[in-house]
Structures are given as C-alpha cells and as structure tokens.
Length: 69
Image 1: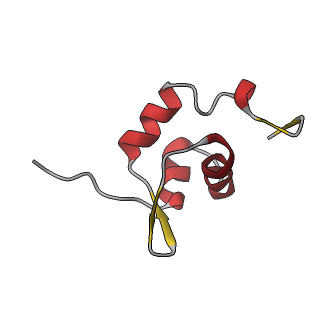
Image 2 (image 1 turned 45 degrees about the horizontal axis):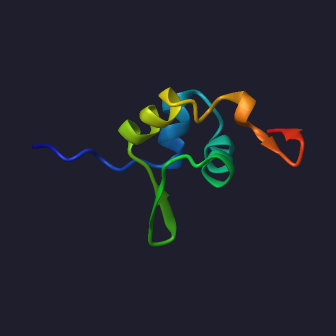
C-alpha cells in the first residue's frame, strides 16, 4: 500500500485552477479539508476532490456576512 503524499496550498491551487489565497479562504470559511503540520497547512488531493464533489466549492454556499466570497 502506497501512502498518499501531503501537498501544499500551492499544489491544491494548481490542482483546482484557483489562486492560493482562495485555498486558504476556503479552508477558513468553507471547511476545505486541511491538516496542520507544525506551522504549515498540508492537504491530501483525494480529500480535496471529495470535498469539491460534495459541493464544498459551490458559490451558492459562499456567503460571509451577506457578501459573495
């Protein structure tokens, strides 16, 4: 069994075709799966893909204080 590698926010941004800032914003406001390793945030692409498929990145869910994120 091969362990899935941990990747950076930059890797996630490239994978999803969004800005790195968007990755951090989604982690904070929308529950994008992330794991803290020391001072760094690490991600597994399988969890990210599952989150996207479950609707985590839907714009309809992107409301914070009435403002579209």
